[in-house]
Length: 309
Image 1 (cartoon, rainbow, N blue to C red):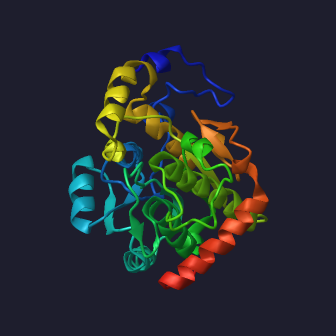
Image 2 (cartoon, rainbow, N blue to C red):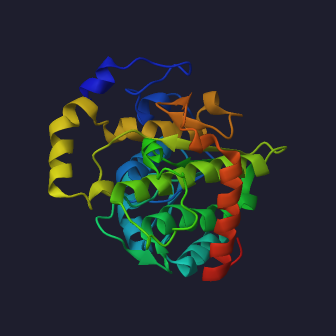
């Protein structure tokens, strides 16, 4: 456990930064529930899958190939179903949606966990900046393709990040989604995480009147392979500050697991969450006009790259 976690205080939920996913699910029986997790083969996704299978849930876990998903999930020992999902490729996303739908089960919780971070130089997919396309467009296509498979009282959890506060000065640069005008590893990552948050807010609004909930989560800063693209100095900084500022994987996975299955999070929707509690986002993170504009722009991109929104 990090020093930061040891010094942290619990919030209104009774949990806080030091809470682990395993601890907050103690006593929960999730037998019969189906939880879908993207990026379940490593990091927070794998830890969430481990804890949820431990509590009896059937985890439908995705990785870039079905082999990677199967290899990661098999040692967990619980009920798991591996699915291939490459978020950067619309054909793969559509195939993954079809595979999940073919299972014929209701999804009690969908955790959009996968993502990439801080690419050192501009890379593009289908003409758009890679972090924005993978983290936002890929999950938009995946989640909207499965909304009707989510149980009537099901929960959708979108991983955002505190990094959404480092998005560009205009929030979402709708005129620079290609990244060609200018590019910054961290600002563009922040933009993709702001897009995740605004997607969650707008989807929650659109699902108003139903019992389905949608929330965005900041997991905290965790030492996982998400940071594999960081430069040497950035890695050194994390290693030096790690004992003070980094969460363990168990602490990092806690908020997404709390939002997905804990009774204390039932009925909460359209919120930004951190340390297993509702938290404040940036002003842009609450800008519903920007969320609506992003949704419209995203639908246009999805139509352009193929497949219904």
